[in-house]
Image (cartoon, rainbow over the protein chains, first blue to last red):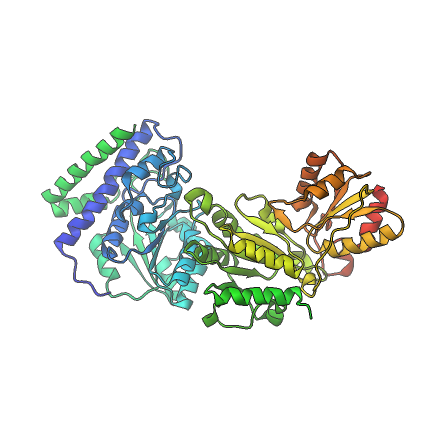
Amino acid sequence: MARLTMTRQDKIEIFKKASLCRNFEEKVFELIKKDIFKIPIYLSAGQEFIASTLAHFFKNQSPYIFAQHRSHSTYLAFGGDPEKLAKELLGKQDGCSNGMGGSASIQCKEINMFGHDGLMGTQVPIAVGAAFTSKKFTIALAGDAAAEEDYVMASIAWAGTKQIPILFVIEDNNLSILTEKKIRRNWEMDNFAKSVNVDAANIEDDPEVIFESLKDKNFPYLLNIKTARLFWHAGAGIDNLNQKDQYKIQMNLLGDEALGIHQNTKNKIEKLWNNLI
Amino acid sequence: MKKSLKETIRDVSKNHLAKGNQLYGQCLTAVGWVGGTVPELTEKDGLVELSMADVMAGGLVTGAALVGTRPIYVVRYQGFQWFNASIIINYAAKSKSIWGIPCPVFVRSIGMEGGIGPVAGSSHHGLVYRMPGIKIASPMTPNEYINIYDEFMNSDDPFYVSEHRKSYSNTEELKDIKFDSPDLVLFPFSITRFESVKACEVLNNQGYKISLFHQLWIKPLKISPEAIENLKNSKYGGVVLDDDYPSGIAKQVAYELMNLTGKKVVVLTIEEKTAGFDPSKDNLPPDQEKICAFIKKLI
């Protein structure tokens, strides 16, 4: 799976995906404040470069994707229909999970993204079973809290034992609702993975770093990616106004072209929502 | 020579693997290949030995079913389902309803009683009964097992198949016993069916008129119109027998029967207590003697 070093075009393509995710989530955040939604919404803003970089890196492989409750960005970055996601959040039957799943249980058959049942971490053993049986490359995403579930760790170990073609991605925002990681544990997921003979790395959510970490890898492989959740666990609030924002960092790096993408995407998202509410 | 139930299960499993499916479980070679019900094959043939992580195992087979295969999942003691079944009943059972994606797992859940202690004993089908989207049956004969398997292959739902080790040597099909105007009607499930038949024979030889209708399906509950009519014509109502706890399925089935017939229906199951290894502390399903005494008290 050798790839060339990341080019500016790669960065722009990744930014386009991230911009879709960020603008979608910021609009939803605004609508939550207006009490438009009747269900809990789990926003992924701030974490969008993980899914966006993965989607770009694996664009020719159409992997199976198993994510959990904070996965709007995964859905959007891999090509899920934004309108169907919006309808799902509005509780409509023509939403991406038939109005049944809500924000936490989104799916998209067209991109091989399976729904989540709402119980933390179950997507990981399910993903391992799917990859083991089908031999198809699979990506399992989990938060740093879900990663602590015993069955998640057992699944990673079994994937190592059976040499299953799967990438585990821990979206490590350091928070379980509001409880910090250091209060919950004194170990890191990459060290755990290595202890069960699964190669792993612990990195930042800079797209270039993620991209480089995926080059020439054999699977199973685990990436613990440190990121920052922009909004509350659920609902409309901001955890920390001073935290790192990868989106702003990348927009500054890429300059006017990125700014144009951002504005253009923002307009499209506004139009999408205006047609629905 | 007739095939026993265990030979039937082994043959069904072997044919299933020959179609490219997989059979998953922990310690599949244990105690004579799970009582002689698992074909002596390897992972190359589709027999997959899992690690001992119970909750994970239920997730793995759910994932296997989600991507288009029909895994058989062997859980050697039904008491283990408190861990093993969690992802099956929370994901596999709901997947079709939420996302329109079927997740057909065939769960072989094996019960046993007698000297097995506080954890592994008895059937626990009541555990999964409450969750929509899963089918439950308890076959005790070779033909019943084949029928349940065939139904599974023509369905896209997960199946919980409540087996019992004491039935594995059985080669016979079980027949209902019917009196036109019975004193009482028995509705036995799982392993209680064998002792219920014996109890009926004893009581009917003593001049009682006890009907018995064998129960294969737990969910959906399938009680024949003939059995319902027979209960309506009974003098003292009915008894539901099971080797799960009384608040498992038995009281629920009794409630359904009472609603359908207006007759009083009571339950006779294992006791509401934790079993121990000391024989005096064990918790066994009702035997012929206990069933006879229970019925005589009712009449």
